[in-house]
Image 1 (cartoon, rainbow, N blue to C red):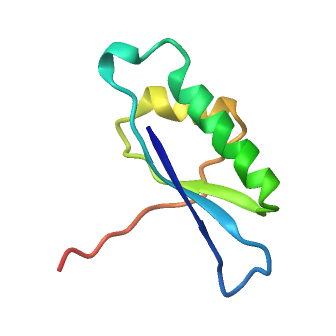
Image 2 (cartoon, rainbow, N blue to C red):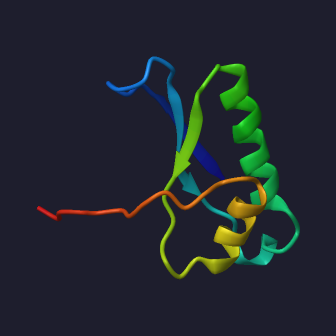
Image 3 (cartoon, one colour):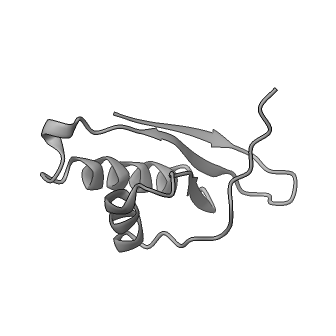
Amino acid sequence: MVEGTFRTRLNWTLKELWACDLLVTESARGYGAGRALMNDLVVRARRASCRRITLESGHSRHAAHHIHKSLGFEDRGIYLVLNL
């Protein structure tokens, strides 16, 4: 399952696609499901004239990071949270 949300930013005229959730069951891992889901998001973002796709991923998700980087994603920063 993948969930993507189109969003606009104040500092850019073009929208971006935020990949907010990507889930592949453990039994389905290693068969290309995650890559196929991400490729689908790339196609959708291009069709919608997005300037980029952003996503968040936990530090321990090494296999997911490998897939994302192989698709051209770059590590661009840190993710900060304030729990209320």
